[in-house]
Length: 152
Image (cartoon, rainbow, N blue to C red; front, side, top):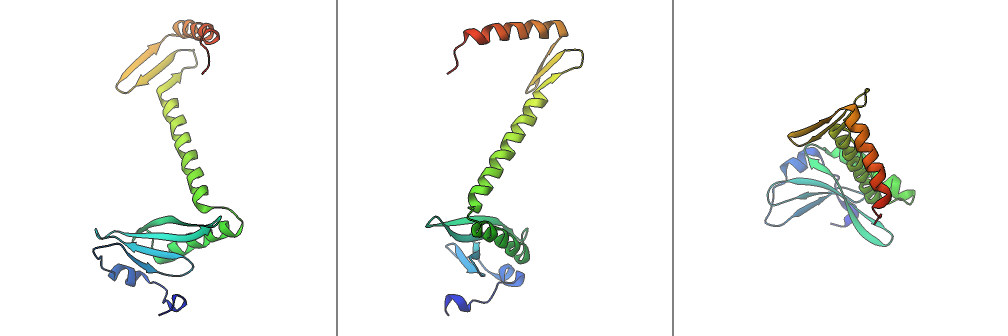
């Protein structure tokens, strides 16, 4: 059977697919495929080319992502490709932005400055609470040492 004669996948076909000793690939269309791992896991992937290189993009796990949803994700990625944008790079940038946002939230949870100027610092199970006067002293100290400590 030629590549273009493939029958599109259905949820029933993916559900019925049995794992083998090696990773098995079932192809849908336009680069969409599902990998069936020996452990039984079924993972949606999109094979595409960008800048002359073949790449793969993870689209989710079956049955959490069904055939219809996988095709929508494939179409969104192909729209990015048509615009000259690598969908893998977009996903990587999104992950970095999420990680940075999570780091900012965690930092905000560790350092709390009350309206009266008192500072609370939490490090794991330990916490440090400074009064407003102690907070001012700490700021003066940090400002003074900032000029002395070289950046590097």
